[in-house]
Amino acid sequence: VVYRAYSISNVPSDNEAIELIIRKVPDGLCTTYVYEHLSEGDQVKINGPYGDFFLRGDCDEIVMIAGGSGMAPIKSIILDVIEKGIDIKMNFFFGAVTKKDLYHLEFLQDLAARHENFNFIPALSRPDPEDNWDGEVGLVTDVFKNYIKDATGMEGYLCGSPGMIKACINVMGERGIPEEKVYYDKF
Image 1 (cartoon, rainbow, N blue to C red):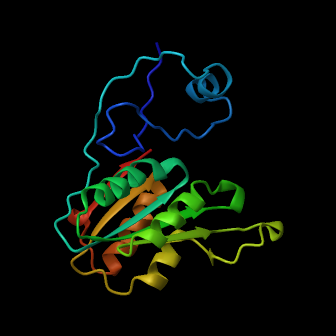
Image 2: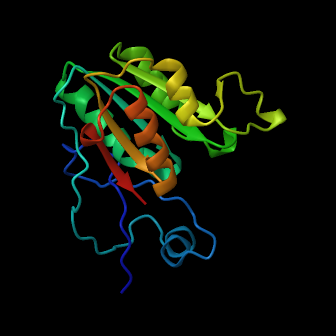
């Protein structure tokens, strides 16, 4: 038996399914199995949930930053806020290297167009010329700093690698979010 931790990406009220965002890791034991051997309808054993990554919402505005498969728990929070009609402004910065690393782009852009309290800002750190990318370019932390000049009173939500989390905590602190108001899910 092999165990791996994955964050749930669908809305918490969905009692019919569990949606996961799983990035294929070369030679990864679990992801290789998921991508090459699992088929729709196959049964797997799951346990949990574990962790404490959820919306605190003790503010009027939140900033969320994720990279790669770190979108999963952020997406769940966004959908939960929208479904419950919570009056909180959400800013979601999603970092990727090239356009092929982006996913759920149209879904999130559509959510942002339909919900005035939700801003979605994707950023590519090294877009390929063939990407024809006209969005934000640079490290997601730098893009965050360009958009958010004063984050005093906000909460921060992060999901990504330990290095990304550390860099985001630092820039959020520079903008006024104390570390005790920054919540994260590291992988």
